[in-house]
Length: 491
Ligand code: ADP
Ligand code: MG
Image 1 (cartoon, rainbow, N blue to C red):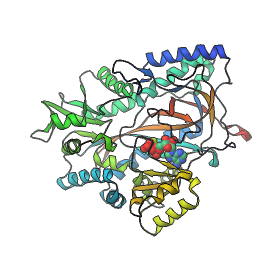
Image 2 (cartoon, rainbow, N blue to C red):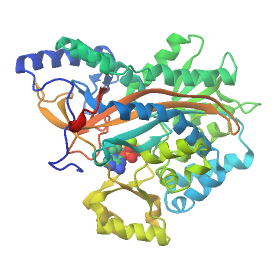
Image 3 (cartoon, rainbow, N blue to C red):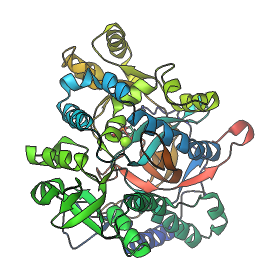
Image 4 (cartoon, rainbow, N blue to C red):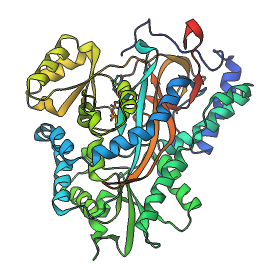
């Protein structure tokens, strides 16, 4: 997509190609290692609840600029606080989404829940945010990171990513490169995220209450979710975890005397949404009713409805406008640092600015990506496809979308290993997206926990627009940190 033949290639972790025999042997071992350590998923093509495939992975860790990695880590608590403050700014959320909800039914449904909850007052003052801020390095600015998006719901791969460092460590050792391991940052995403849920459970303060995971009808990314569940059960055996779909909550859930959420007679302390972020998760009004029931309950939601709305692309676009950050961050240095990770984001609302942005997209579509208010991958429109997509929309319909500058990431080269693909794998050109996890817990007045909680790296073929791992175009990876080297930079 965005890469032409001049895109620079990052210096690799080890010299490639590997000899064929060595490559075959280490790849077979790595596949088994992945399955046996839960770097795995359910197959979409041959689904069985009784079996797993290894998750697509990159054999040798892909390079990522150390300075930029460290910057992203250091920024996370600031981003956590930013999102917490945005989520609690009723006026900002309401004005920012005003045009969008006129045309985007899904966001409007979420917003209606928000409005109803506001009207009755929040039953539970606390929210827990398990966030993931995603970045690409941008070659035109010396590989400075640019934020792709921020996820406030169902931020995934914390579980598997934690197990990917040992997998790639194993591969590097097998290949005789143990000395490289020191450049792979350790990753405690699983513990960090789960401890966040447990801190919320502590705040709720009822010994018999449980943590509820809201799940899809079929969970292909089952290992990632089970890692969370098993970590909680093993580390905190007194806390039970239940898994239910929205449909099941509609059937079984009710509110008790204190508005506590009850499943049968079991009280729910914390609700962790791994579903509920796309229209297909709400096939009937029943699922929407279940979401509303949970939002009005005393349970601590991850995310609560206002956190969910704070994670929309439209809010991201609004935050990138000049002077808006000042509303949410006090420290000028922090404002500057956060401002630098934003790339151009443009409204397509039906007003003068929005219409000018529309004209700009038609003139130079190759510079942009067009995004609707959706999560989960596969929804964006890229470059030359943008004019047709825009022309099919009415002026009003455009306000459900935002326009964003395309980020141009550097390439890396390596072996992508996927179930059923040819053996040994071929060297391919790839692009990596870094995700930094964050945990933030608090109410409208106070933040009681705020920390950075590990990372994940997702790598896709350079020719693919998007690299959803579950969608089949991306692969799990972890960063091999490299330093800028005089004139050569990172290349
Ligand atoms: P989703 O909520 O569906 O994950 P994203 O905004 O993360 O939406 O976009 C999906 C993918 O599209 C990203 O993971 C990235 O690969 C690609 N992408 C998104 N925005 C940009 C951008 N501005 N420049 C380059 N690639 C992008
Ligand atoms: Mg994304």
